[in-house]
Each structure stands twice: as structure tokens, then as C-alpha cells.
Length: 156
View 1: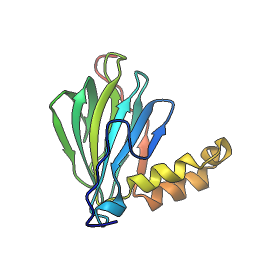
View 2: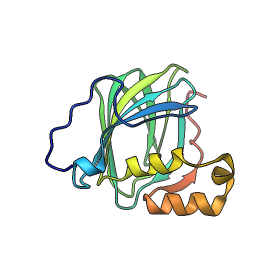
View 3: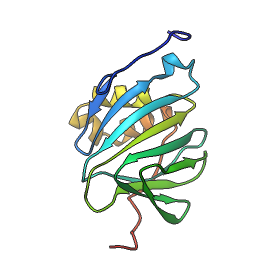
View 4: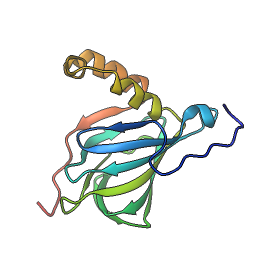
């Protein structure tokens, strides 16, 4: 559908309601000819994403609401509404909501692909998630290099 105008109202678009977040794909890879994926990520109070990197993909985050602590290349950064954070390829990063309160952000994953990762995960069973080889293959397919849990935060 490249070249066509896309309109999505609030709450529309492919969405994935996970235990710790509810993600809406607003502009998928098919709409950008693979250039990027744009998502709205509604982070629940329990959200935390372990340390990882992307060898060829960059991520840009724009905080819409709440406070999110990002660990980027060895340092913690507190982000609030209106903050933009760009993480280039190869830079280790992790994040978690602050103050145990929900938050909301837009995320651009470039080049595109994260929407495919979410779609594949939505079809997986608990057994699939427990299968280390299957998870390693999925992560490799979508340029996700896990590096460990969320690092210790200075406020803990």
C-alpha cells in the first residue's frame, strides 16, 4: 500500500495488548516501503525492557505522557512528556517506567520491521516463548540483540 494516505483514529491500527504494555502500530513497514515503523506504546506501570541493542536499526522515542527512565550506553536518562530520545544502531539501551505509573510514547523503528516482530510474537505460545532457540532466531530476524536485564537504577 505504499503511496496511499493512511488515516487511523485513536485506538486504531494493529495492536498488541501484552502484560506490560499495549502497542498500536500506526504506520507499518508496508506503508513506508520498509523505511520505518511508527508505533504508539502505552506502557503499563510494570513495564521494563531489558538491556539490548540493534546492530542495523535505530530507535527514536517521543514521550507523550508520564516518565520513562532510559538506560543508554551506560547512563540513565529521565524522560518526560515532550522529550525526544534517538538511539542509533549499536548502542545498548534499556528502559522502565518511573514511579510505577503508566506512560505513553511514540516509537519510530528505522528501518522498518518491529511491526513484523510484534505480529510474530502475537502468534506464539508459552512454549514458543520458553524455547530459547526459537526466541534467538526471532530476535536475530528482527535485529534484536538481548544483553541482559534492566541495569540497576540509582533510585533503587
